[in-house]
Length: 74
Image (cartoon, rainbow, N blue to C red):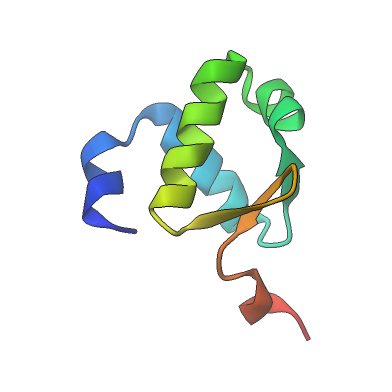
């Protein structure tokens, strides 16, 4: 993770990243993330964007997935 992410991480950031670490194939929309993590849409969207800006997640259309996902495919 990048230095900027480490500076602004919160419990929500760590929880989101933890889920993606445990399930490398996870692909989730903002609405699904709000339900899974129990947060407000603006709060969850900001955390997802922070993780995308830190290059640990990426957004493809409405989905967020691990930036290194292709490393896990056969």
